[in-house]
Structure formats: C-alpha cells, structure tokens
Image (cartoon, rainbow, N blue to C red; front, side, top):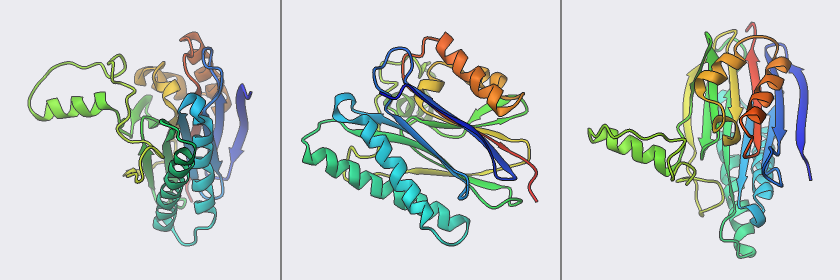
Length: 260
C-alpha cells in the first residue's frame, strides 16, 4: 500500500513545481496518480473511481497514456494540446476495454491537466474530465478554472439559466460526487478545454477532489499565495488532515517565474 508520494522542488528555469499525494485518514488505498512533465510543460492529476474494481489502475492508465502521447509529440503548443487530447482518448479506450473484459460495473478516472505554452507566450490551456480541478492563484485569490462535471453542478447551471434562484451548495449536495463525465466509463469521452492567460508570479494548483472538498476556494487562496512551494505543500497537506482528510488527496503546485 502506498500511503503517500512526495516530490521535491523542480525548477526548469521558468516553472517551479512540487507534488504530493496521500491516501488520507479514511481510505485504505490511494487511487490517485499524477505526473509532472517538466520538459513538456504538461501537468496532470487523475483520481480513480471503482474501489475494488481497480480505481487506482484506472488513474495510473490515464497518466501513462497522457505521458506517452505528450512524450511522442512534435511541434508547438497546439501539438501538445492535441497530444494530451489523444492521450485521454487512448486512456479512455484502455480503461473501458480493461473494465469490460473483467465485467466491472464501475471503473474510471477523472483528470485535470494544465498545458503550458513556451516561455513568454503568456498562454496555457486547461483540460479536464470529472471533478478534479485546476486553480489559478493570483493576488491572494484562488480562482477555479474548471467546472466540475457532476450532476449537482450541471443541475445548478441549468436552474440558473432558467431563472430559478434556488440555492445549491455543491459540496454538500447529495449528487455532488455523481459524475456526468469520466474516463473509461463509456466508449467515448469528451474533455473540456479552456485557454487561459499566464503572467509571471502566477501559481496554479492541479488537484483531486480530496483537496477542494475539504478546503474552500478562499482558504486555498490564503494558504497558497505566499512562502515557498515546499512550505505551501506542507501547509495544504496539514490543513486537509486537520479537516479530516476523508478521501485521497493529491495536488501539483506550480509557480510561473520570469518568462524570457
């Protein structure tokens, strides 16, 4: 059993990163996987679902397929984005067929990915499936750059679109963790993409729901806005443990430095 995975500081001249993954205080197995592509500028967190039906295997497959696709990619920013999407499609097929061959009823994974363009471009792209998230931390505020693919969130969006002001607390809603999209649960998957701007000093948090279910956006912004990335890593982990750590929790914390 892997209780936690901790990674030291990486610095490729303009992006610094640390990563952390832990089983939490309740779960018996860590079903999260992550990878930090320091050469490619691609960073991914995947959260497996399925429990006894090999959720950990599903998230491992996602990271492996995305890493393989990105490693073989040639070209610029859009080529990297296409490679990530191709990797997710490949992962979906691998997980789906693996589960089908074993008659599993529920095996799949979420994914949250950030893809950086070259230094100085001021651009990046966010890709996600499910309820793992990417936050941008700027000026003391943590802004979620992804929208959870869950029944609760999509229902909330629908009722507001129709003019209904019914309050819904997504975190406590009974359907908060019922996913409307996941990798491997169907024969096809559609990832959601968003292009964003990047400036020097920006920090980004790519994380599984074991992080944002415990820590509010405001608290993430406060905890992650100052001090070194290593200090923030320990601060975030401690806050999650103090909040009960009911699920596996994994994150990659990034900081964009001077862009030449």
